[in-house]
Length: 576
Image (cartoon, rainbow, N blue to C red; front, side, top):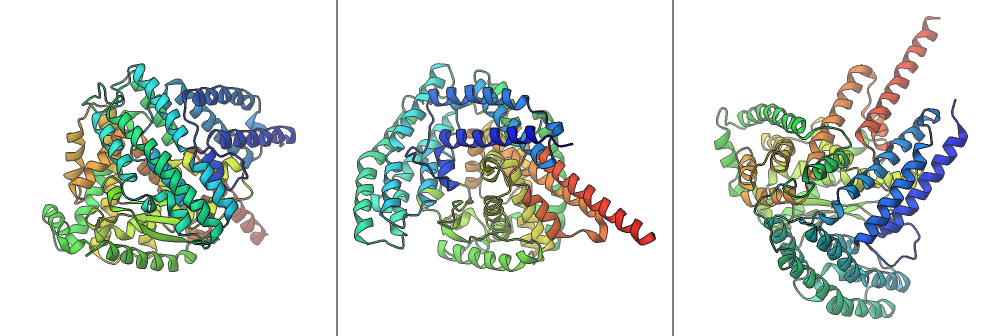
């Protein structure tokens, strides 16, 4: 029996939590299309985080008074997800994670660029609001510096390589004339560009960027290179710091939504690497390199698998995306009401970034999603283009998140919570790389190898992240471990390892999430047999929204039970 009073109290708590989160993370509200007068984009000072910790504890106490056993299936999922998010805020605050935040690759310059790239200024009112929000960037950097300084004062020291990467990325983001910086892009791409009303605000924005935003980022880079670099360490483990092991464990629980211990994750990674090496050897044999994987990798590293130019790279990726899109309706019952585009990263930024990433569309569909691809062709060999496109665009990130935003039946914090469940988001995207096999998209041994190399890359992350942060591996050992098993350029591998050093635990979500999606697919196929439908199965997965792995498992188990009962009921009627 469902308790409606408990359901109402949960709905009220979920709504209050969403309002709380929109205040604490205003960019979340902006991207969700929530009406908000807030002109602040980020709140990152120590006082901000202390306030969040207090509120999370209070909301957790309220949630604990609601018995999930008297709720319906969807509300039980909401209860579990609220608990996960509030407990994550509490536990990460307790270990001082805000005083040692990741600075690369998702540092402040990338986050502010993400805001600009997601913003549309169709009229003077929108332009004025954009400029006001841009004006809050120096204060945001000031609050972040306070948190970083507090961590430094308590004895936390960043690895030197992290500070070098972070300062380099920051300086690259502000290099060049103001007109070419990403923060001016909303004006240049506006349908009303050049009109008198927008021109005034564009001039205000240019002056603000020149006199306030750029100097604030220059000062932030100087802070990373100077004050914060005082005593920077040569070791790379986040556990080589005060409360480091507690910090890493809290990050693992938050990122993976599981209770897996670092040692278990390391062993899982080793087992996955062994499995994938066997499959890779088969792909090499199919390509004519039986028993000589090293020669095949050398062959792939040659210039014939590198696009002739960045423009050629983008054109090839765009054509693949169009081909993929034509297959999507056969495997998915719904597609989003928004489209996406493919864009090249600026070269100065691409040097320090992964080969590709997705920027979801704003929830109000005022701008398209963007599939950002590197402008350095050797960083993304052509044999990886297909799995990269499946991962970042449709049916991967850009389609997944766009459909979540359209799920009006979910509480707001669930509809717009993709960033808080990377194990679900990234696991789905790798699942989509493999789905390309079922869709008949992989046509050559090289493309199959590209998919397998992408997957072994994610499996190796389980090994090297725990290796560095828990088992004491050096940066060199992590780089060598990847380089010995992949044809990827060494500079790309080094940038990846530096990302794992700077962002402990995040790299684990990809394969852990992927393995769960594949397990659920195999289970559904085995249980339903000829009645299995990709369209129905994917509707269940996508309809869940961004969720933890335990909740995803419950959603699919409930769907399978209903399918089995329906079949048994039909058989009984037929026999009668």
